[in-house]
Length: 592
Image (cartoon, rainbow, N blue to C red; front, side, top):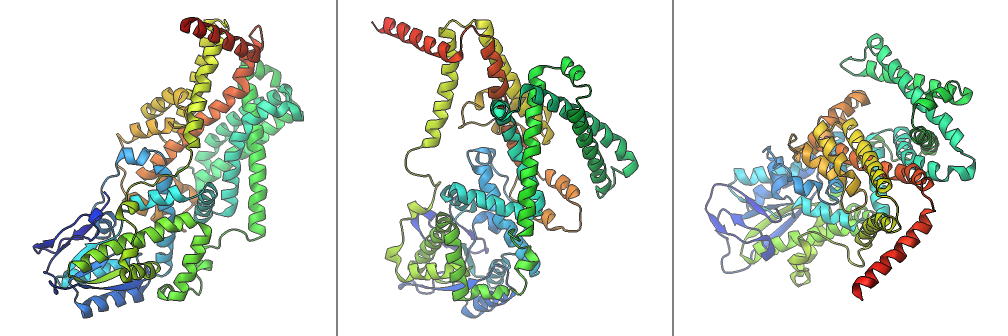
């Protein structure tokens, strides 16, 4: 919902207007100055300051305005009042970049929560104090902030790719050790690097024989590692409540896997026997993935050590906030400096989070003032200067229509053009081969390989991420189609199926923040509990399905297409040219 809501104080409504009209609706006493203009006093606060709570309570009690306006929308107001938040709409949650928008919101919420923990005060306590003080004095409350989902969507849309990567990096370093973040990033890079090794490894001496030896070593090592983990779990207490025994057992399994894989790869023992039992393509694919993962982990570990040694990672919360007084956030010079620093990081993000909301809130306050209300507005200190400037010069306010709704980037839609181009290329590939006379059996086999590889990887990773079998199966079944159209994603379909069994709501973000703030528990136990949070489970499942499909597409290009090309009587290039000529002949004949 985009708009405002006035807290119910139990009195008859005096007036009402929509968000698009400007002023916020209000209930309660009639305007104190029905013939003239009302007044607005803006109180700038720090959302994690006890002094701001006292200031708000004292100001409202002394001023006794007609309306107390607070920097809240309906969803945050209900959550702050302890009401059950609305369930998130599945369509909104899975559409486009909404998952990433929730990650952005989560990051902003997590930072504020950590600051609140550091100073032993709930974030937004001064806004709640304003609401409760107004209710005690039977003063109407107006919710004058823009809907949070609209703000986050517009914030994310205005971030550049580099800014988005920096934000994700900041979140990663904020919730885990830099070394863990570095190695995790290395693993992701390694998964994508593996198929590239399969395609271009020959140019640097990575032959099929090398890939076969490494692949057998990786497969045998994986089996040995699993057996080692299962054997170590009972002895080391894998079922301990705190999860420490399980972590140790996983460590044992990992050591066994690496040791066995290295031994097989170096000595070549049993390679021919195992390779003879398996598909050569499968073994080489396992080898390229193993080499990619090793390279990725190595690079990630080096980067993590360098970051740690050079002290490049963001400071821990306790160190960063040591000696910091949250009351300074209400000081004009300090706030101005912080706002300018944020603008340097992301001009577009600052526009969505600060400037647009200044104008939106000012629209509501100007409307209340024009109706004759005396208003005390409680907002964050960073918004005070902008709002007061608009109140002094209301003619400078941008149109309300420009502040609501979803933001979209202008210019040429390169993403959509590329998406349609990829889809057309995929269809054209099969059509041209068919027109060139390639047998239907060969084309059907190629398509079946595309379908199976995409389905297995997408469904497999979805299941590993915790999806139900039916959900994973649906994502795998559509992966072949969605992988050739970047505007679609198999994870969306998996997510929709999962939402039949999950209830996702805004409170999940608070639960995640609480889990991440608990420094007394081991990481494995925290990660397990995070996967029990519906919102986080959904995000992980969606992401895992999409990654599986992406990896499958790369493997298909690296291994299946070369094998298919080798089974043809002519090169694929020659066949494509022949197919194009034949297609042109048929089309010309039909037209003529």
